Image (cartoon, rainbow, N blue to C red; front, side, top):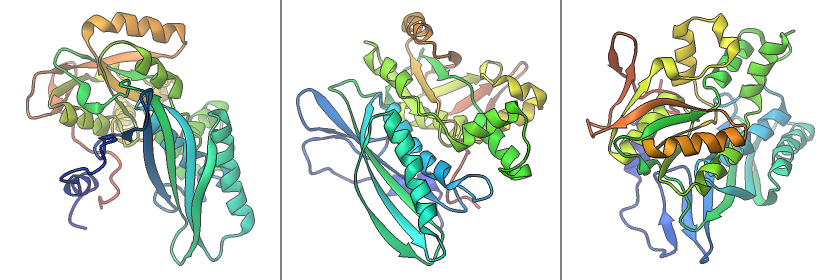
Length: 330
């Protein structure tokens, strides 16, 4: 493969769309379709491959199912939407047992129940390769309230929900010791972030219902990658203050370099990162405080400067590389 994941996506952008009901296609967290005068339909799809996205040594089969649906729900959250339906396509190796597949579906059922979602279809095939699961989620958002990456403007404050780097920290522990190790309670908490991420639907709904301009993305491939997506989509430059990135208290036990590696490049936190006009920040912060959801300012948007993402430290400002999880990197 001579392209990275993001170059490949750019290369397959349609030159035109044929359906008048399509509001937004490739280029954001979900596609948006206007099917009636009150709501817009949101559609997204993700694939998880054994050995790439999960290992039997780090997750139970039920957790694989839970996560495969949760990561799609996170894309709906990044649009400010509500998930409603899902479809599942799985490719099953010959050596898999029925019990394993049942556990995967139980995991999906667990997270679907939390958000009152219905399973409405899918496909099942056999494969000689690794186990593959593809989930499509359909949701909706109120007309005109969808949140896009391209909405950031110069002068905006850049924010993120909760803490960042947790999932990568948990994965590091699992890769070192396996899922059956006698972990401390704090270590178990970090591992839980990796195995069973919580989509930020509530936070997304707060943002969608705020009567202000907001750009939004979810942190799936690492904070650096998601900030670059916001900068490129909005044609701006973002400066992130390294000292303002929020970390879980457990990470005080590791070096700053390690914390930043997990936060900027680790991925799979599925928190929300976005921007809002400076004059609207206090209102937004108060709304989140009332909902008891932590939200933090981590930087600002500045005028167009080659769509860079910069990281500010005590004595310097540096380019923040656009890297994170990339399926075609070697």
